[in-house]
Image: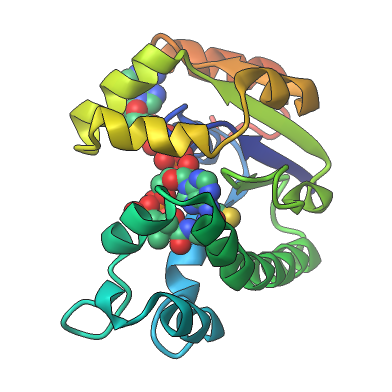
Length: 202
Ligand SMILES: CC(C)(COP(=O)(O)OP(=O)(O)OC[C@H]1O[C@@H](n2cnc3c(N)ncnc32)[C@H](O)[C@@H]1O)[C@@H](O)C(=O)NCCC(=O)NCCS
Ligand SMILES: Nc1ncnc2c1ncn2[C@@H]1O[C@H](COP(=O)(O)OP(=O)(O)OP(=O)(O)O)[C@@H](O)[C@H]1O
C-alpha cells in the first residue's frame, strides 16, 4: 500500500482531490481535520486540556467545544494556536498512526491518502511515502471559500497567515496538482500521477 500525504493551504482542494482519488482508485482516506474534531469532544484528553486553558466560554449548551469560537481565539493569537496544537496534535498523530497500521495489516487497499493541512509543520510527513501538494491561486481559493463555506475574507486571510507559503509547500512536494480550473482537469492530473490504471476502479 502506497501512502500519500495530501498537503496545501486552506481551500486549495485537498478534500476534492481525496474524494476523486477515492472514487477512481482503490484508496483508503484519512482526514486529520475530522480526526481532530472527534478528539476534542467531551471525554477525550484534548478536551480537558483545551477547556482547562481556554475556559468554559468556548463551550456550547451541550458543554461541547464550539469550534467557531475556539477558531476565533486561536487564529487571532499565534501563542494560543501553538498551545491548541500542543493539546491536539500528539493525540491526532497517535490515532492516525494506529489507523494506518491497521489498514496496512488488512492489505485491502492500493493507496492510503492522508489529508493533513499541517503535514510538514506538525511532522506528520513521516507517516507517508510521498507528498502531493494541491495548489490553487489565492484569489480563486478566497472566492470558492466565500461562496461555499461562508468564511469572510479576513478569516481566510488569518488562516492562510498561519500556514506555509506556496513556495514552501512546493519545495517538499513530490507531485503538484493545479486545481485552478475544472474538476475534470484536476482528475486528469491525478490519473497521470497515480497512473498506469492498475489500481483504477473504472
Ligand atoms: C481551530 C479549530 C477548532 C477550528 O475548527 P473548524 O471546524 O472551525 O475548522 P476546521 O477544523 O475545519 O479547519 C479549517 C481549516 O483551518 C486550517 N487549520 C485548522 N487548524 C489549524 C492549525 N492548528 N493551524 C493552522 N491552520 C489550521 C486548516 O486549513 C483547516 O482545513 C480546529 O481546526 C482545531 O481544533 N484545530 C487544531 C487541531 C488541528 O491542527 N487540526 C488540523 C489537522 S492536524
Ligand atoms: N476545481 C474546483 N472547481 C470548483 N470548486 C472547487 C474546485 N476545487 C475545490 N472547489 C471548492 O472549493 C472549496 C474548497 O475545497 P476543499 O474543501 O476541497 O479544500 P481543502 O483544501 O480541503 O480545504 P481545508 O484546508 O479547509 O480542508 C470547496 O467548497 C470545493 O467544493
